[in-house]
Length: 346
Image 1 (cartoon, rainbow, N blue to C red):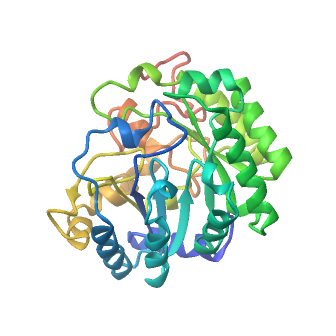
Image 2: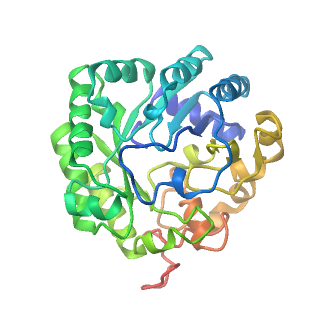
């Protein structure tokens, strides 16, 4: 959302209007030194993870579908022994890599050099939910202060080696462990100290078991945190409760550890498995779910009247999990003028 009018965003917009996939998010690892207790990759029951050979075959099919960007997610993709080989395969097939990593392994010159080279034209997203040790202890299965130090030093190393701060971001996942003040402090420190912006996300109950419900943040805190995000990074322009424009959401596929395909990392309504059908067949059969075809037809009626409909259409995952369906209003969005004050969607 911070890329503005770049060649990549223009290309993504073209895919959006053609209802064609532009980005494939691949959850390729469950291992991660951050040990977040809410980790989606560890919370969602899965089958046998996709092998390196399977992933390489999927990358070739993704390129054939016209997908231009791969978001490598986990866990931490850098924990995979073959992460360099996989990112090279994506590049050889003409796609740009975006790396979502805990960031601790970036505090190594060799690893940082590979990360910079393999994400050329893309971005690196590190993961710091807080800079407060007490908050992190409450969010992680085990807490090692070295992980945070290594992530911060990894950011410094990326910058020293020439990665632009506009191509580095921080993922902050809101849970009930942080308050708005702590979230604001983390976002402000990283921006003031390193020039990097924060991708603000709120926890969703993607596991379907109820395990994550006790960790969900308060909706009013989510709304306030996004208003604070707007004031820090967007000159006060509102973007609702998400950090991704509609073109991102409307052109993305997500693939889980074991090959199940759905709308995105946060909206896991599975429409097929690459172990049972080809990626091409899954996309063809799941067009409506993947690209929100029905929602586009009447989005004017269900999005908030205060928002910029050319930029945002509300978080579809919020609507799906808390609002009754992916094609309805985002019940948490602070710009939803019809939202009753004090209403709690969960």
